[in-house]
Length: 380
Ligand code: COS
Image (cartoon, rainbow, N blue to C red):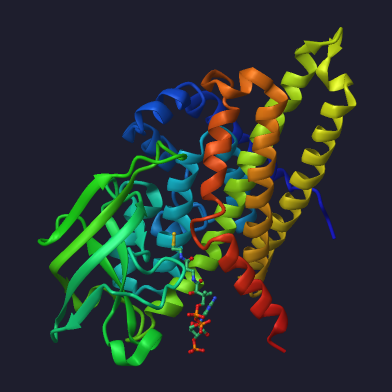
């Protein structure tokens, strides 16, 4: 067992760190206030290969491994979790979904543009009444022979307004339950496909979250992903990889807050000394460092499982469950260490605290991760 990163991994991590410091940090407070994220930054992330990290270079990807993916995700998330969620969704839900399960034609047509960041993608599973209970899809896709007619509503869709390519999960045959669900590639601009207003969110405010409406949208049959009835398994398999990305995002939010708190505690003085010399603060830092390192081990293990071709349903669920809990707990502590300064935007930790919350909710709530883990350990 080797806990050292390879030289290549160190280079990749440092490139992401450098990009986050020089390009993401300068406008991050403004973007959070205005709920915006410029196309120019998305393009730069594409140029650096961050939009198709694990995609085969023959489809325009960077051909890196999952360890590289989580290293990049951690570094981006330390500074701007709104940027990193775009990266995560595009990489592990959209690009991976197409590369692993799409036809050659679908890969040629869509994946090569998505992997370079020329266009970005969205993954549409959640509905007003089907978030955790993902088999209860109300969106329907009726088979009309050479095409499907899609009707329904999807909620809380990351990249909802910005994307050009949408992977949409819908029920094609209600009698078959989850085996009657399919996944489709839907393009922006298809008649009947409408994008609702942007959500006003607690955190990751720079990311673009919308409700989507499908009213009699005609989707060509060749846009179905996989065999008839594969849609629910497609969603589950894709989300397992997505959870590695969100776990790495949570890790980055936690480690970003920890680094700020550590620095602040060595500068801020109270009762005649730097506050890091007070055991009340030093012990908080000790807990943060320990639990963040434990979260990093779980994230790395899940990524390693993916790279090895091992099943990663449980390891990704454990990584997400734990890292998101660590992110929530320790961003609160980072605000506490900063005292009054922690409550103002200039010091960044309040934003990290707000950003942390979503990591316990999206791509499967913490309660869903416990379902996955408990079923995994009890199945034999
Ligand atoms: N890989 C492949 N297949 C999977 C799978 C996985 N990781 N997880 C479940 N399946 C399959 C099961 O094997 C079963 O198929 P068979 O009946 O052919 O054996 C089918 O999917 C249904 O599984 P199950 O009976 O476990 O479904 P449940 O309704 O109990 O739901 C959970 C399972 C709760 C785990 C699932 O609904 C889930 O992950 N929900 C959260 C969804 C989510 O993350 N939402 C957020 C939206 S994205 S921001």
